[in-house]
Image (cartoon, rainbow over all chains, first blue to last red; front, side, top):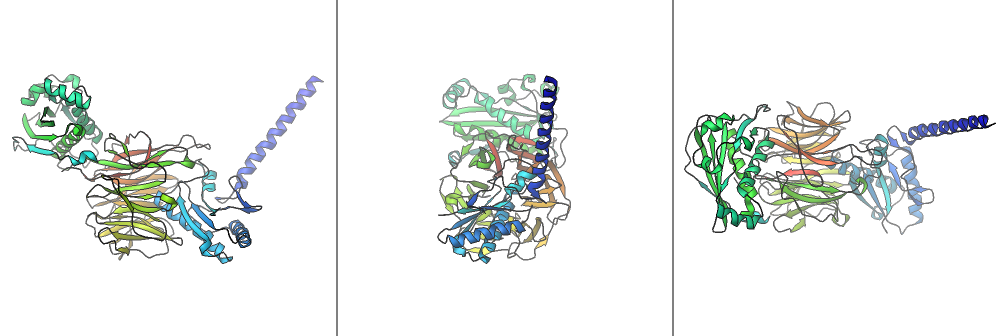
Length: 158
Length: 447
């Protein structure tokens, strides 16, 4: 009896660890597409279902399909809440020279701004600031951390 | 800062015009540094007692000789010999060295000196001797306020370096940099300034706002840098003598990557608007702003040639970050970097012949130099992350910053200043009491 119980427990532990490790590997592959972050770890919400940030590929400021969807939701929310102004904070990862990254952060925030404007959000409700690589959300030095840091974050200004 | 207000008075002692027999070649990596004996500067009892009270140092003569020794050692060109082996006493050696004794310990050059305290001033004399030829090569005296004693050590080193290498030194100089503290996600940054050897660190801002990329005016004690004051990233001008600062120009967006023109009269920088960064200048006398580049790509990190006729900068107009050179009016733009990888932060050497840069290739960062037409690329150092080289005023040494890799919790991260010779030899940590980045080297404070 005791022996079967031990076996049973051992089996359960093995099973659990298998599931966990499967989850772990699945998680990593599911959090990036190419090198664009697709996870939710660092994402905050402006309103229910309205994510506050979009992510970029290395050295890129082009919006992905997912980013455009996020920004369309932001635009809808901004149209409903017409008194809210926003700041778009553009960021880069730590794998670039400081000055170039300041320019890159500015370019990323502006590509988000341009997209919001095509969905009817007036430019005078939007201001832009670049932090370059100065304000990472993830302090790790690995591809996943860098993907979380390449971002434009929409923040309420009032 | 304060100590610059005191003028150093330099006298020539009875300098003999003997041709130097010893010479130090600084164009190659120096694998056989010149053995040099730096005798402690002698000091008489009464002078020493007075100076002990003022400076709280047991023997200021010995302290000044340590400054000189450390400078010579870090230059990589000299091998200062252990003082324990010295046979002759400092005061007697200064009058007339027994050259046999000094050549016995393999010294090829000898520095001797004397410190006197008179009329509330520090008077320092020193002599440089050619041990093998048995001759005096140089003799100089300085008078200054006692608190200036470290600078006296730096000036002696500059004179010795110049006499033995034939090139100006870089020891009586300072470094302005960004001092860093705290976790990566909430880094606190302050402007800091120190002597070239890491002493006399002073903080110029409190850390309330993010500050980046300070650079010296090559002609005076002004500094330009980027500050996020009131969350508006703008280029500022700071007078480090008075502490007065002002924003540079009236731009409706971020200005960044500032540097002075070689005559110190203009600031060149980037201005970012609607996702596009271009290069602008502002004349500090008449405040006239000029647009230098006009291209939908990112144009940044501009740096003038020493004659002011050209500007190097980095741009991603080819699709990736590369180095370009143009005339200072923005015409004749020409790409000069064609190697594999990305190239950034070009800085024109004060000698005019080279451009130092940061290169990123296959996940590694390099500091390198190339000729101004892009030929002769030479990589000096490879690391996980390093960037932003700044030249010593004689164009022989580069200082830059290096960051270490952090683990997934952010542990293991550090940012430090390093220097390396143009030859690729003599890589050294430049010690700062906090983490540090964005170093900029001043011109020589005295000549």
